[in-house]
Structures are given as structure tokens and as C-alpha cells.
Image (cartoon, rainbow, N blue to C red):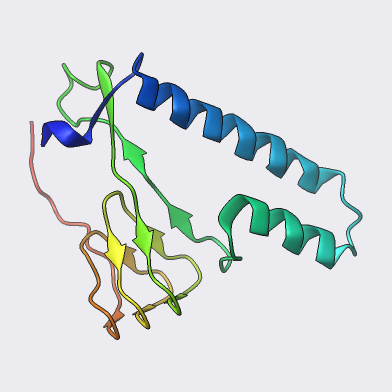
Length: 134
């Protein structure tokens, strides 16, 4: 595990991430009080959270934890995700930590993006395979 992706739980970086999570939690809690038909209000709220709307069931993951049983509770791992302009992400896609998606790329519905996507590229499919056993 590269040390630049390790985030100590009591570090300033972790505290900043926790503050961001609290802010997004506060913003998303407003969804429950908006009138059902207030589409403009929902769009404005999502713009504050994400910058632009995403399709249904898209998962963007920027943090995780080690897989070694002895290390799981010691620290979190994390890496930013960079999505360029004019990217189309299909419903149900999962974007994993540290990924960059190039301009004009298309991520198909249900895709699991674990590696960088070059500009003007279509990616699809799941990537789950056995990597290690213990």
C-alpha cells in the first residue's frame, strides 16, 4: 500500500474529510423536507453536494481500509477521484478511489471503474476477481 494513500484516523486530513461528510449529511438531510414536486430545489441541493447530478445508484468511493485483518482498524486509505468535462456515467456504475476519468469518456451502466479511463473511451463491465486469500 503506497504511504501517500494512507490516512491516519486522527490526522488533520481525516478530520477535514469527516467535516465534509458531516456537511454532505446535513445537506442530504434536507432532501427529506423538500416537497416531493420541488424538482428545482432538489437539483439545486444536488449541485451543492456534487457539482452536477449523477444517474441513479452511481457509487463514488474515495476511501477504504486495508484488507489485512491486523491492519483493518488501524487506518483508512483514500485517494481523490478526478472526473473531466463531458463525462457520461451510466446508472449503477461504481468509481473506486484514485481513478481519473478523461474528457468525453463514457462509463457504461453497472461498470466498476478501478483504473484510469483515457479521454474519449467507453468502459464497461465488472472487475471483481479473486486477488488474494488468507
